[in-house]
Image 1 (cartoon, chains in turn green, blue):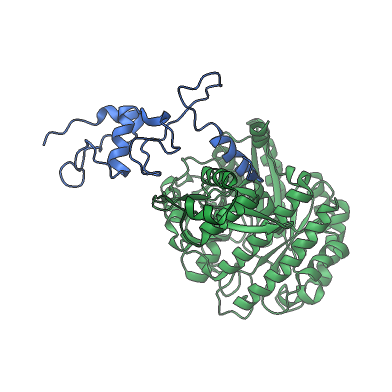
Image 2 (tube, one colour):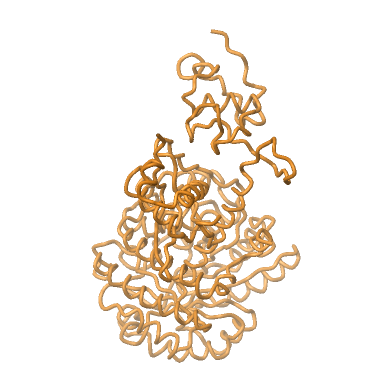
Length: 480
Length: 109
């Protein structure tokens, strides 16, 4: 007699109802009682239809539930082999969507946790071979590189990064003008964004950023006592008092794009809700995103296992605040939850943790092309130069090595469609190996994904219109 | 589907993609959407009597597909060379079965 068994899935509850997240398809289904009972019974051990029928009295519902669950591959025949994860490497040349330009590797702050300057740095910013500032010529070559490598894409995104980007404002400004002109000549649009610590903002710069519709992300850690702990000048003085009024000025004048804050979370006292409330209500940011610090585990500011648990608890509180605000039809700027909701809504199932090395590449000050901005200037994972183009061999080898099918640690994890092993740079810093899965935050990823699934399930019941904003055009076509 | 409700976009796509999977060829009067038979019924393991949906519609396969499915993934005794010992290069010229199947030559023991 054929025995059925549950296939890889994650069951969760939201709005008092059972749901299932399927792995690796990343589909989310709501279950009725019959389907839920069948799935739960088959999760513990394989059972035949007759064994299930002994427990479930409504046999018509049982058979229909078995048929539907097997149709979506939530359950399968116990004896049938599970197909291996297909290892499909995207076809080259993969069009470039985002180029991150490290216009300088210098910074006027000395944040003690910084991966560019701190103890875990991978790029020699003092005596390395790279110039400290990107020249106008290299920036122009980078623009040409971007336009060429973006292939058939109509829009190219350029993100300025550093170091502190505004230290090289003259080149940044000229690059934007040049890129707009060149993009127009080849019939493309180009979109700009930058990350800055806000210390060098001044009226002319703010005016320029607003005029040119440059997306701005501010690195800031929260209220004064939090910000001044790590985000300090070389002499140790905190930066809060300098940046807060400048940021308020920027938020007042620059209305053409939503402006977000990017918070680095460290060990020590973590108060996500207080940081969020300060940055939105008191400073005026539209969105706030949080990221745990990237560091090797022995550093004092590294987040410990207990720290991840604490962070998860605080993220959960803020995520449910997001939920209630959204259900009430108001804006909430907790961007971490929004990003994950979008991926859940689309059913993203990733072969690679991020777009680095695919649609995103970093460019170092000398024009070397890197896996991403965090590797720009480092010799590991160099993918050519803006002058010679992408080194397709290196790129292909990288993708071959970093595919999720290679990450045996991840093969049993239900959260892998979203996580796919996590950040390459984080793995490089923790384990000295970009192919390594970030095992130190698995529980955190699963916990956070569970929270987002609950929020997603609740929204699907209580405010489905909110989720419709994530339908992209392709999807709308498919649905209609 | 009555017991599962697709919530996200991927779930909706799966529902659509599996909607018309089973189309008995003898049924008439219904819109006949493209039917892609799934080859060897290994997943349901009854052999060749039924396809993976339990139907009989998908059993007639193009020969190149038949050959390939048997030789790669199936325990079913098939008329294919012993690729492990005797003819390791049998499919060397056949990178994509649907395109290169003609390049698979006969093997004489």
